[in-house]
Length: 199
Image (cartoon, rainbow, N blue to C red; front, side, top):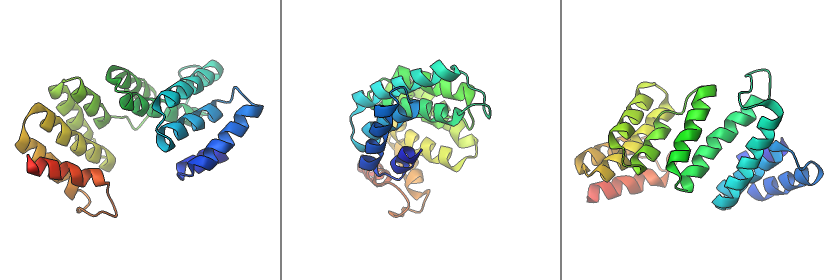
């Protein structure tokens, strides 16, 4: 889909225009609703609207292919993306129980699993031991991205749990994962480490 390519390349205005054009001619296009939801979330920070549109996209997809699409036999990648994005949207809505449910729904069907991603909502629910366990599972998976998510989560988990030393260590490990290189990592890594060091 051209609209999705534009969205992935952060050309949000063009992606919105293309998605809206699709929906004018095909109102039941799950791709159109998905792209519009993604743009509203990532490009416009209109999280409630993104939630509404993504629910509509999932409803349309599952109405056509069912809630357990066959990998390889259906356009399942769209569904996988929808479930992942719903988890992130729910997080921004501070719906942490719902976020965990979407992560579970994704993991039931698709690989690689979302592992360390569960640590953040678990922390927000004050389930610190479960959050640490989720981060540990992510780190032990051996996937570089999971290690990065896990370290950033532990940085926050230990801070919220009141263990400033453990928070500092995790924040520092997250910062040094890419050599504290501003070209390769988010400003969040630097601000997290600064906060942990100050504490």
